[in-house]
Length: 176
Image (cartoon, rainbow, N blue to C red; front, top):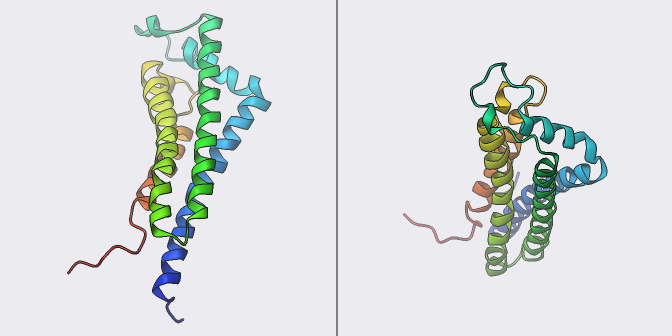
C-alpha cells in the first residue's frame, strides 16, 4: 500500500478527529433526546439516587438524601438542560471542525469549542454522576440505581477524544 501524500494524510487525520467528536455529539444528543422524549425513565433513576432509598440499610450518611420532589425535579431539569446545551456545543463544534478540515488555522481555531463540549460531557458524567451521584449520594451501593459504569464510559470516550483532538493536526514542524 502506498503512503498518502503528506497533505492528504493531514486531512485524513483531521477528518478522523472530526468523526470522533461527532460520535460524542451523537451520543450526548441521544442522551438528551431520550430524557426529553422518555422523561419518566431517567426521572426514576435521578429520584431514587437523590433519595438514597436503595443504598445499604442503616447508613449514617442518609442526611445527604434529597427527598423533596421539587428539588429532585430541579436537579433532573438541570441535568437535561446541561445535556441539551452540551449537545448543541458539540454539534456546532463538529460543524466548525468539519468545515476547516483542509485548513490548519481554521481547524485549530475550531478545536477549543470541541474541547469545551467534550469537557462538558466529563463534567456531567465524571463530576455529576460519578463524584456527586456515586460518592455523595452513594449510588455505588445501589444494585438497582447505579449508573457509575455507564457514566465511566461517557467520561472515557470524551476524555480519549480530547486527547486525540489535541494530539496535533499532523502539520507541526518536526523536531530532531
